[in-house]
Image (tube, rainbow, N blue to C red; front, side, top):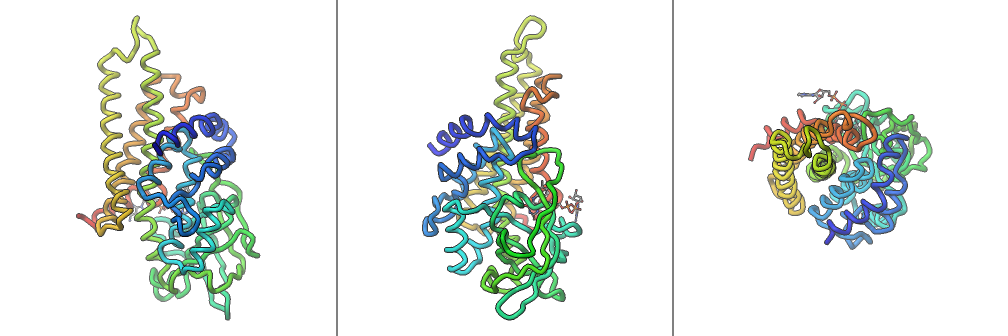
Length: 368
Ligand SMILES: Cc1cc2nc3c(=O)[nH]c(=O)nc-3n(C[C@H](O)[C@H](O)[C@H](O)COP(=O)(O)OP(=O)(O)OC[C@H]3O[C@@H](n4cnc5c(N)ncnc54)[C@H](O)[C@@H]3O)c2cc1C
């Protein structure tokens, strides 16, 4: 029922703008409005904080169905979870009530600020500093590649509080868009997900109340990594949705397109491609749903499964979208058809929340 409801909404209110959002590189406000109007913008927030209280699998299904029509729009529910999960996992009751409540009540979106210009895969090498000063912390530094920066009102920020302790000297904070000293760079010009703004975030003596610290000092990096264990499952969901969108489109196209006097779907070479695409997609879906169940229970092997689902589903999405372009021939290579957008959008799922090389490192360190 949830899938059917989200699919109908996505097809009616989000799909019609997907090509335009990509072409113009603009934020998909129509998608935000539709998702918020239907309480689908941050379904993971527990009912205790005015949220929908959806479990991890339901959240995956929402993201998957939005990504099936528009990957950029799927970053609204996905990054609302990524940005707010550190608060949900490690925040004080006061922080949860304030910020998870605000997110659920549509008072603002959330972003997640871990990466920096010189600290990508090696995120613990970050330089952004937070220094305690009486009842405040003062933040200085630069975060890079921050999804939905400038649109979001709330930012979970990882910053160094004790430079001698490397990852154990990193703490997590909530910073608000209106905090003095916070500013944003120009949107990056990207290959895909062009509707999702990606910007640098600058901290110039940003003074925040000390009670915006998430958990204890020095636990920020652990919280950031625990968060990714759960949210890599949502990137897998995004990859599944993009791949399903491409497969559905290609399937319809080959039934219509005629060459050599018949529909190209009647050629065995085409049928074998479609069979492989559907087989890989279903394998990725089953792995992702198993990982979602582990996320819901916080099983001890979640780290392996989250990395495996993200890595496998994103590799599969890249294969399937590339094959979808192939199935449309020259038409697939043009912007008159959606599959080239899907191919460009799929690529990011192999890169963010840890590249697929990093996922393989994570899996190798956590073999079941
Ligand atoms: C569109 C977009 C949105 C993003 N959104 C966010 C966000 O909201 N919040 C946030 O914090 N970050 C975000 N990121 C950052 C993203 O997570 C990083 O880009 C990613 O982790 C890789 O870091 P890097 O770009 O510095 O690449 P690098 O770490 O420099 O990696 C370059 C290459 O080296 C490889 N490599 C690095 N180390 C190893 C190793 N040990 N073994 C093998 N290979 C290795 C990588 O796999 C990659 O192929 C986003 C990025 C993009 C592009």
